[in-house]
Length: 158
Image (cartoon, rainbow, N blue to C red; front, side, top):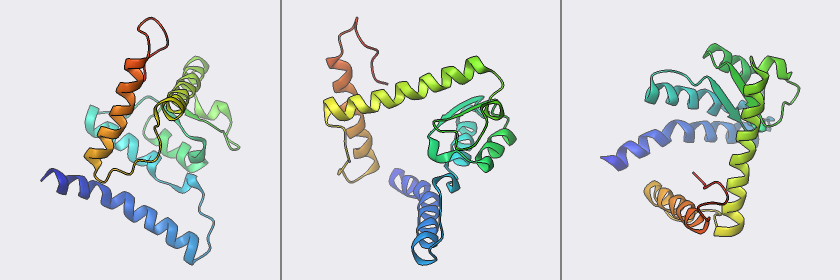
């Protein structure tokens, strides 16, 4: 049953990828990363788990678009931080400049953790076959990094 549930969750994103690929390859459309609906899916998933949309969100610059900004505003996300603005004004993405700076630092910290896992612990493309195996692969890299990190030193990877 767990496998069936995992597979059912993969159907919508797979259909989106197929649609974007079809548009890009067969119809030669330019399909920017900001066309992705990931920015809509993640707040919905957050609401399913926690009962409300997140107040603050930090996203990759590839999702920066006016449409994604408007979608976030419609979900009452107060502060949104794209890694690259791509023509969006900072004032449009935030209510608080303090929170906006914290989101920028949080995003930079996440990127540094990923970079450290890649450089030091062999975190790269996962060739393990199932989602459970993928989670095991990721956790093994994170646990290795945390065991290697002295307790008084750098922040652990989470």
